[in-house]
Length: 402
Image 1 (cartoon, rainbow, N blue to C red):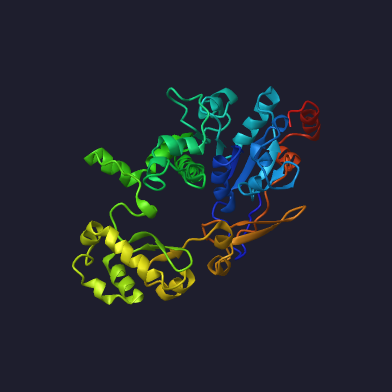
Image 2 (cartoon, rainbow, N blue to C red):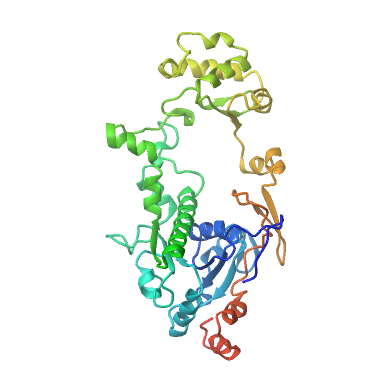
């Protein structure tokens, strides 16, 4: 593998790491895209007979056949090879690829990795240092190993819907597939930890992450409150913080703004910026405890003050002195001046179009960045690197192994 450099002329952070990924849809590809963005060589194994990564077919927007905009959101900087892992030749290809890889990763149902030979027990003969990462819905052990599972189901069962939305409304899921995204990121962390261990010890292992475990883990302090005091968090009006005021949505002259005075100094700053300095010393408002006890009155007064100007005007007034954010829709969020200033939008050269997408949040020098690969785009390249002859490759093609 040749050394790839970022635009500053430095080697990419994960240069030299090779990951074989049997992945599809969102969570798994999102995790390995983090690694590909940082320079790891991520080789997607897709099944041509199944139409490849199911994400290629998720609409409603496409760049072409088998190339949805959804798919392009999760697979940049990767390579694609088509292999039928249910055949003996396919298993031979997997073993050959694993021999020179740091990790084999999948996001399949919990009972499938062992059946397809994707776990450490199956691959350690080919490479004792191989790390086998598994991202599943409910894990590879227990009563739900064969259960399919998706993000919204995890939000429902882990309590998210019960704490989201207005108090008297129906349970509400988060607007994004946040469990998929966080589980993918967690899987990337676990995979790198496994690789570091294998490089120092010479011995690989299985590393497991599940949607359910991540969803439960994200309860964090909310879980600690219940487990130690029995307190069950409930929904609060206007997305307010359960114990801090002001820390919620407020109305302005033309819309909404989110304020978070999560330190006492910010309350004083807010009062000054609103032109209500007398609130700083007002007995009912002067500290966290008193403001929480008088939340309804505090919020009424803040709403009244904020109604004097527009959201944009207040953002200019607060300008970092008060933690505040405008409430944007997706268009406004992506077209904001700050997003443009920070170069957060990538434009990638795609065979049929310019692919515009959001840049990696990890800043460590600019990656050259390539769009997501077409299905099987790197078949010949990867198979030749693995030592297969042209005759063998032709055989694989004729027998629909690749």
